[in-house]
Image 1 (cartoon, rainbow, N blue to C red):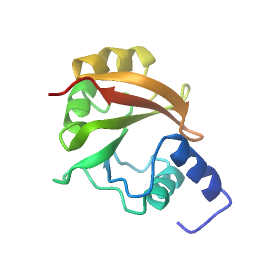
Image 2 (tube, helix red, strand yellow):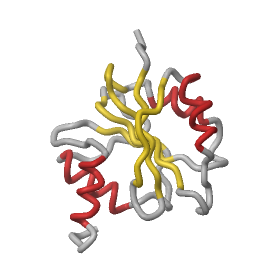
Image 3 (cartoon, rainbow, N blue to C red):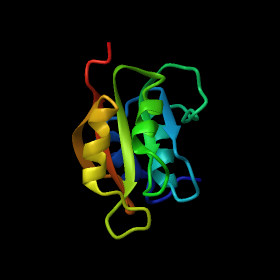
Image 4 (cartoon, rainbow, N blue to C red):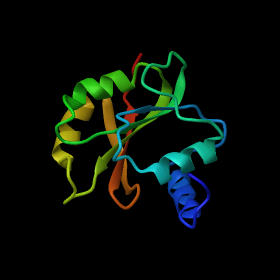
Length: 140
């Protein structure tokens, strides 16, 4: 995707989500419905492409695109922690209310603690997606 009028807005969202230059970011749940502008903005802000689910690198942040019907959210969150640096965040991106694949907040609230995470904040991550920042409880 080339630069568009939406690029500055996408970069503002990526910055609001806490992405910074030099961060290593791993992505789970990529599909044809993800917000491509947000993905591009994260790559522009961090200065690197998003790593896929199979990476062996240690990462600073995980982006997990999740929809109702994708499977077991607890398992997905545990998998997302595999390469995450101590103190790193997981951004759980879910469709907004009324969109196909919407995930109830109570499902996130139930799954996160079981996976060793707790919700820190929720934001609008784009026109179709909400983001919930999950942080690890002491994972030692």
